[in-house]
Amino acid sequence: MANDKSSGQSGITITAENGETIVLTSTNTSIKFETFAENVRNKSKSVNATVTITGKIKDTDTSELKKVFNWSKSFKSAEVYRKLKIDDTAGTDEIRRSYEFEQMFVLDYEEYLDEDDVNSKYMLKLRQKEDHFDDIETY
Image 1: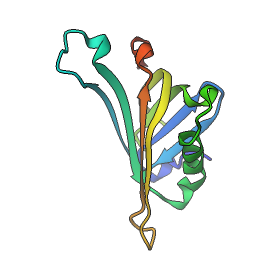
Image 2: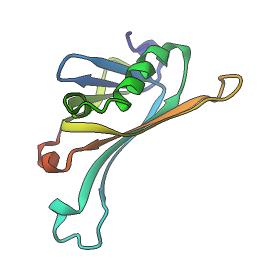
Image 3: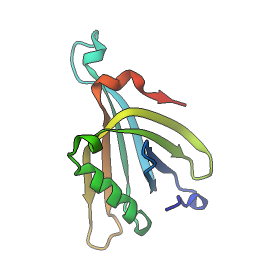
């Protein structure tokens, strides 16, 4: 499924090392490096990287969200952690920012479905495996 960039909407393309691609339109994205311990002097043990992607569920996103759903319920060790490239687009062919994560996994995945599908939303939270924190790249 191609991202409809002519609509002027931002979007996220998630590409796994195995070539699988998930394209989500109409998204809001947060890349967060957060401290979760009071002792921040030892950052290697107290910081994590979390990517949160939210958006409206549209008909065009349904097949892509099925891929997200299937990944989020996977518990086979070979499928849980994935090397990912995440591209943030600005509603054009331009990529605003790219991130590469060595070992990402689905932390949370939620869908909020309303009766008339006008306000249906999703939230995908990804987290970098702790021992690969230094492998994160951005450009």
